[in-house]
Each structure stands twice: as C-alpha cells, then as structure tokens.
Image (cartoon, rainbow, N blue to C red; front, side, top):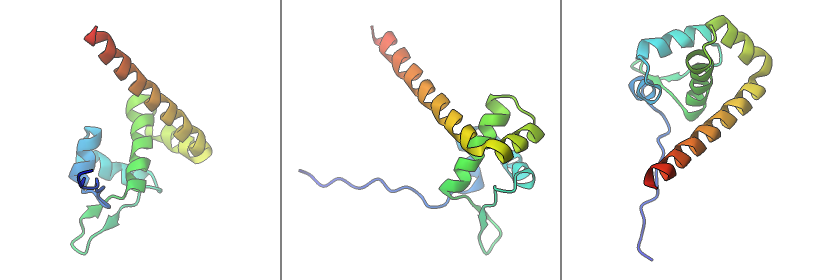
Length: 111
C-alpha cells in the first residue's frame, strides 16, 4: 500500500479564513465577539486573532441562529444562555439533513 500523506488540520485560523468559511465580513465576527462572551479567540503577540476549532464551533452556532434562523442578537444570546446543548443538537440535525439533501440532489441530477 503506498504512503498517504495524513490530512493535517490547522490548529488556529485567521479571522479572514473564518470569515470566508461563513461568507461574512471579518468585522461581523469581531462584532459578535463583543456580544457573545463564549467567543474569545486567542491573540498573537502582534494582536492578531487566532481561532481554534472550539471558537469556530461557537461562531457556527451564532451564525446558525442569526443568519439562518433569523434571530436577533439578543434572541441568540438568550437561546445560547438557556439551551446551548439543544441548539447544538438542532444545528447538527439540520446540517445532516442538508448534507442528505445535497447527496440526493446530486443523485437525482445524475439520473
């Protein structure tokens, strides 16, 4: 069996990389940092934000509530404060359903 290079995940991402993941402006992510206390990326010695996978998961929840579900920031804050685990669970279900839909759509188009 030939050698395969292992897939290496980055430990930290820049704000521009994270903004690109969610198709938002970096300023929006910086603003969310001021409104959501759990969103606290590390900062380099030069002051650059360094986002871990945990930070990205937190942004994913905020993005889901605000951009996909249309909640206000206050509503999203309250939802995460009261039922973060339920919100995470619901987001996972929605993501899985979206993946299944994409798969089925791809299969339909191949027919």
